[in-house]
Image 1: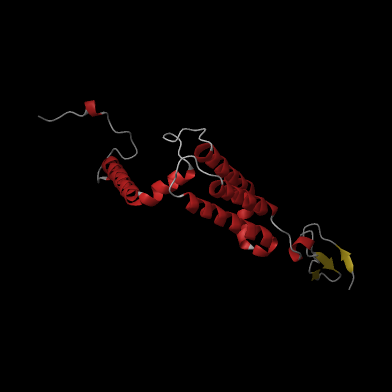
Image 2 (image 1 turned 135 degrees about the horizontal axis):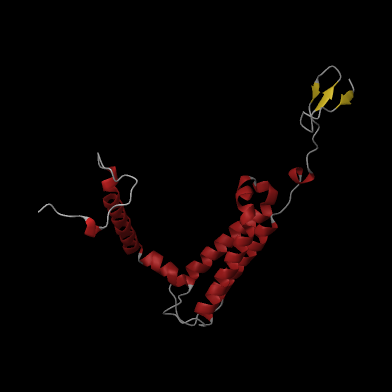
Length: 192
């Protein structure tokens, strides 16, 4: 059986053989699918986060902050994970598929964390009462989490009550105001 012609109505890779039989398309596997390739965005992002960890952990703070060592450990862990994924590259499969497009953002976040740490805690270019370093935010979340949770709970509850009260007239049976704007309060007259 030899190849006779390619039908333009068929897909580009399908060949029609003499007698009408269709041949399976021959596809060469790309070199990148069978070979290892590192993820350079992940390598750069890992190095940026490790640089942020070095700025946080090694450079001395001007003021004393409580969670400096913990923040440096978190930044180093993020950098280590990104370096591992970057070194695994094409071998990391679905993890790389989800992170590949965010490589430049991960680099920018690591560099931003290092810059934020430098101008707030290390050089005091931004005054502390108004601009806290990242470990100040970490301290607020770790020490005040019960109060933050309580405030978030009450805010969501208040939002739910407000939504329910505001939506109730439109949902009541026989309401003609469904889909219409409610009248202003001054236009409502009492029967007395």
